[in-house]
Length: 333
Image 1 (cartoon, one colour):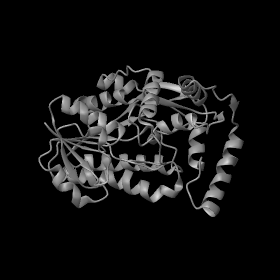
Image 2: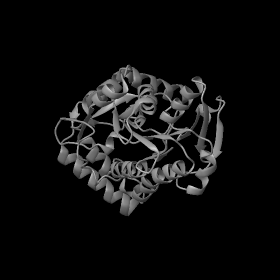
Image 3: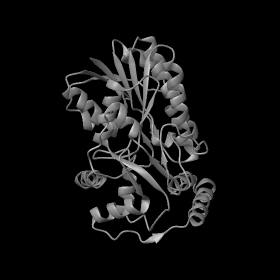
């Protein structure tokens, strides 16, 4: 089978491509000229230069492809990236699927995020039917709008299945979708824990779910790919233990976090003219709970996550140590 993968230089995309090659598929990747291909340079795959924000560059890449995995995206928790997030995470989905439809591609798996599911003020279990309530967060909103684009085009003739991975750990996360917390802990930038919590998963389990979605997912349906629910206090305790550090013991009150986020936003926007850390948006995410159930994926896809999150974090941390990794904040894959 001839398969196109976008975002193949990212964490999920690179693991997916390696798996597809191992299964003897003909894999074509769409990448930008400046993309770091180090993680996939040893693979026998076809490279097509292009960009999901440039519709004309997509047609040649899709020629003759049977199916497509659309994993490309931009991860950024700051309103300063609002336009870029919309262009990549929303319009990018439209451009890819419209080109796929035009080229006769039969089926697409679109990778969204549990950020497009929503969040709550207190712990409760969410599923795919939860009414999205994070419109004020540009990243979450851009992914939710991207799903709407996917569903609209999926009604025109191409089968579309959406997957919603939770916060994903794994070695090779150079774009820091989840690894930022590991590095900030390593670098002594975290002094307390916020009151919220999230759903976490290993990248290998996510790729299992993506392949299962391609094989067994129902058209126009979405599937949460997650594993463990952890409070941020528990997450930071695990990360600190792996790094041989003392875990943060100070509970950061919501009002203090919110005030600090607002203050950093004002200073960064009007004095430093740079991205704030933490941003108001990141603070908002840290005081919410996003406990997203994988029951639908288990039931319909046979999804069965196997990697404990502590093992996943340890493998990611070991990779950062081994490579001497340093980072920039913006994450486009």
